[in-house]
Amino acid sequence: MSKFRLKLTALFMLLIGLSVLAAGIFTGQFYKHNHLEALRSHMETQLRVLSAAAPWPGDQTAAEQSEYLQAQATRFKELADMRVTYVAPSGEVLGDSDHAPGTMDNHSDREEVREALASGFGQSIRHSGTLDENMLYVAYAVKDDASQRPLGVIRLAMSLSAVEHSLDRMWLALALGLLAVFALAALVSYRVALSVTRPLERMTAAAKRMAGMDYKVRIPDAGKDEIGELGRALNAMAANLQDHMGEIRRNELHLQSVLDHMISGVVMIGPDGRIRIYNRSAELLLGSLARERVGRSYTEAKQQYELLQLIRSGFETGEPIHEELTVYYPEERLLELHLVPIPMDDDTAPGLLLVLQDVSAIRRLERMRSEFVANVSHELKTPVAAVKGFAETLLAGAVNDPETARSFLKIIQEESDRLNRLIGDILELSKIESRRSPLQFSPIDLKTFLERQLEFLGPEASKKEIALELDVPEELFIEADEDRLGQITLNLLQNGISYTPEGGRVKVRATVVEPEDEADGEERVRITVSDTGIGIPKKDLPRIFERFYRVDKARSRSSGGTGLGLSIVKHLVELHHGAIRVESAVGVGSTFIIELPLIQDY
Image (cartoon, rainbow, N blue to C red; front, top):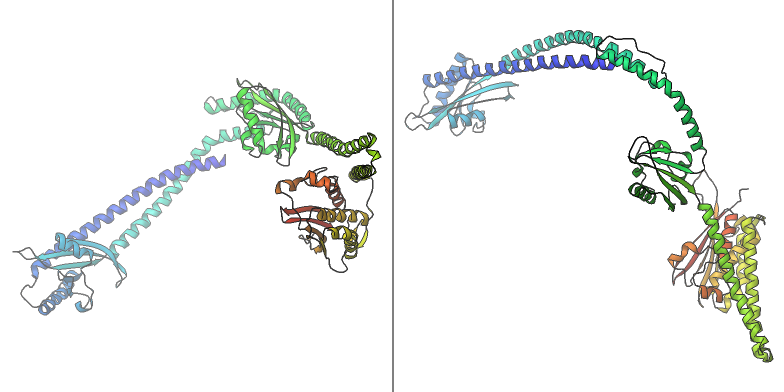
């Protein structure tokens, strides 16, 4: 309340001060204007006297005129105690009481000279660089009586230092008077403000205690005026709040406890579109804190565009909505949404209650199970159908033809091998995902290890005249599971050979990658397997590590692939605490990039 008192006091002082200041400024300007007018009038009278006392020489030469006017200027300087200057119509100075005319500039650009030649009299005030003070200049044009043609200009100049000193004294007196008025105004204003604000201070203190949940406070009776009535109203409000607050607290605690421990996100939106309830689960699912959302419009959550559209639809239709939607912030999730209009307070329009459930894991498991069953069924059906078809053909009599029987039996054997590989890969992937086969880490000389891999695949590459290249520095050791690392590199190399046309190239390269963050300090080994094969379309790159996903299904089956190789590779790389990615362009080739820790962190 002291701030209000000071503001009230300052307001009184400001009003009084501005009034006095305005009066002082008006008085000073009025005084200055009148004084200058009196000086100008006096100087005009003096100019007329000078013109009459010493008429302008008209029939003399320029030198004689200058000599005559210089003598007159010097004489009148002593009489009038003002600087006198005679100027020709062209601006040339013919005589001056203070300076030699020949050393002075042309005066045709002087304001007072121009005005005098135009209207008879001219004046101006400007600073004199010679005297370093402000000067008042008044000029009078001397004209020929017959033709009214200007013969010349007489100019008087007077220093304004006396006027300025007088004004300075006046401003000093005004400032001292203003300070005295300020002091008196401050005293009176403070006394008035104190009498007004003292009862308000008591009410403010009581209201603050009420805001701090102290409803036992009461305000003393302050009389019969409006302030006293306000005090009694505050007392009544405190009594009512004290009665109801206990029950409200209990209900609020029960509701908050239920909301905070729900696994579902709960959001309540009022008819005005402002969020009123936002529980902890909603914070996790939608990526924003309750303090950032409660009390603000739901439309400010720009990240959840589809959710905003459903809420708008709920307000427009007034009907319950049950939907599943994908949100991408703070991370990608699939949410099951129940939106129900509910009445709130005494508002005629209902609000909305949203219940959000994260069903990402459930739907992902359902989708994985469905896709896995479908893919396994499809992959198993193909070789089984082939075996069954050729066996039936043999039983129907083709067995009697040795050449045909041998061809069919070879196909049955190949399909059986493919079926066996498929079942083996499925079991292998299952073991890897369930972590039933822990890795056995040991130091591996990477160059020697990769040379063995290329030597093993040499005959297969020679059939297609594919060059196998190796670029690995000497004595590069990595800690890994040798069998699993061999499984990774063999799979990638076999893929490169399978999908590279004859005469192509498959290259393996290994380098040490320095850590980007010095605080981390973990060195990694980057192994790249690149080929000059058919490449992978850009749209297929994000999915090539999925189980049973094939870019070219016919080509994959003809090469004997099961569709699980890259998925196994990805899982094995992750078990080594590494990462794998692919870069490819159709018709150019593919590059698989693996980064593994140089030393495993157990």
